Amino acid sequence: MAFFKCFILTFFIALSFSKIHVVLAARQLLQIPPLPSVPNLPQPTLPTLPTTQPSLPKPTLPPLPSLPTMPGIPKVTLPPLPSMPKLPTIPTTIPSIPFLSPPPGN
Image (cartoon, rainbow, N blue to C red; front, side, top):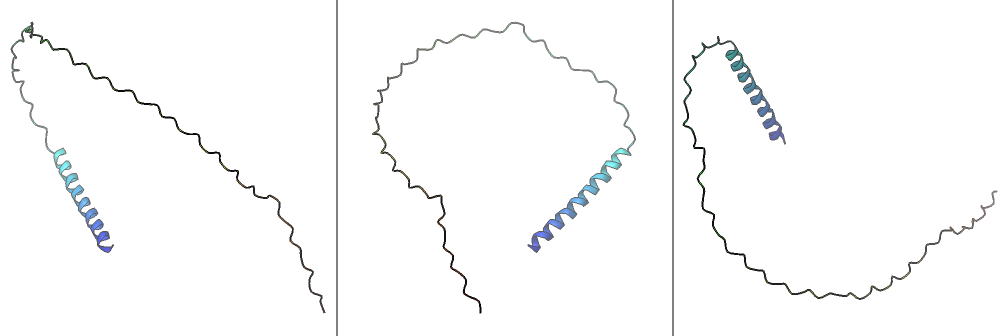
């Protein structure tokens, strides 16, 4: 467990140092003077595409074969379920407990 904690601590320290380098690099990039503008370069011209498209021959496909018919599934009848036996009822009244008289005091 201690190794895991040391590993996590080392990872966070390395991560924080890497962020420092990124911040310093970004600051240096912001301090660079602006670059001179580039003159407009000539744009290449593309040849024009033909307006008509060549027509391709349409193939004639043979008709699909018919699928064989599936035999009918016989209907299954299940026997009736047996009737459930009646559950015994739990009595709701609590029987009274006879209390014994306390021993006589001397």
